[in-house]
Image (spheres, rainbow, N blue to C red):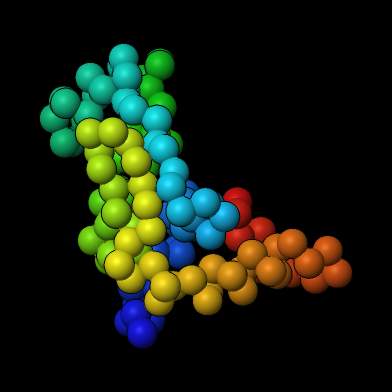
Length: 126
């Protein structure tokens, strides 16, 4: 069984939850490649990237969510073993430890799709 901290951390962010929940339905996902200004920013100094992530700096044409996915969320989920990610082709698949987090994801998905349930479980894909 996965350590509880790994699971909680993996599910703590909305982007990571969406990625993992999407893998319940389809075990292969494609992540868009960085392009234009977003690619240039990721090649820039780390401090500049941190300013963009924190919201201290806004740059026109930068897809902050996609940059975060590439540089924070996908590497973290891959490190935990919940996904496998190939940055060269943008493919994400279930990792060797996906089955350890799968029951939690299924519970979240069931709560979200059950129209009679209200409360915190209904917003897990947000």
